[in-house]
Length: 419
Image 1: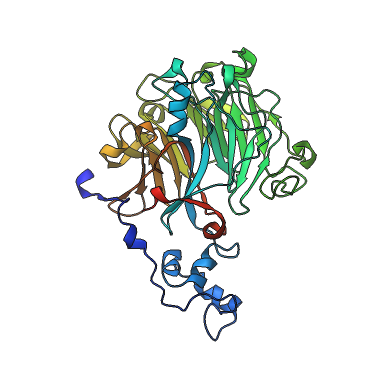
Image 2: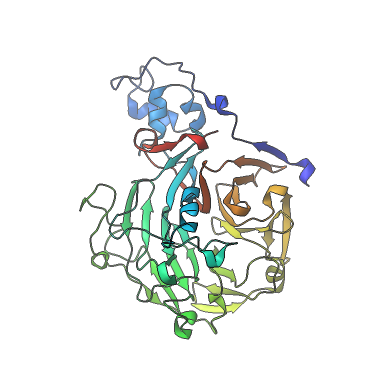
């Protein structure tokens, strides 16, 4: 399987995306296509691949980052600056600052997202001398075209997030979700349809009630159709009390025990259900499935459970892909036969830590948060591309979401990460 796979390592091919200007220098009064009104010209250009538009002229390049152009998918990453790891080891204050960035596949550059709201500051415990060989988890989900930060650890091993922190790529704005009645860490987080789920976990200390609890927040159950954005103190975040927008967490059917509070768990949305296992890797584990329609729990099919040996993600909540982290094999679940079918095996997939999927591609973060391997599961044989992590950062998690609008003009670029 591996010998038939096309593998491309990207990172040195900067010149491959060098722009050749076949148009004159851009002028705001210049039409997109001479002789056509701009609204007619855009209908035509919307059918052209963004990479082609980017390579032609400045006016077309500007178009693909405008809100009116159909957004293509990009990789979003939570990043830990390597400098903070060194500072943490030499300091009594172990809290770390994290960054958020997006990799634009058209310009081939990493771009930092606007900073989250400064009040309260986002200070998370990721590295600690008591956990030398691992990171403390930072848990996030993508739902309804939003990146949502749900759970993490603060100083003294307390829950760091009392209400979700939301980033909307198309608006390039941060906002807050409804407060969690019981903030937690080391929990199960997932998204199904337009709803976010948080299950089990640990609060300030272990509590069997929290370890069995399940809460749901439906982003569509509010007095508005999307997160609230305003200019309370800045044009990129809102400090307004979010309970005014009608959002709330709802208690759902409880887990039968607290066995899912041992690790940070990804609950994978798939065909109206949430699938999750309570232990990572090859170790013996338990698996359960939540039915979102009936609000009931059921045992995971034997074949799905036995073959679940690493991080997983679903494409459009229809197909689950999982990486066997010990063998470096990407597999997809066949529901009819209750087996995992191998797609490709690759050395770079060994030790996989995080997986995200979308647009026919599966993105895998390797061991140590170094490098992202992208597998095109639509092509035959599968095509593998390696996206280098931004220099000086370790990847903590990834998501696939629409690209940010007006990225070229307003985002800070991490030049070391381009390819």
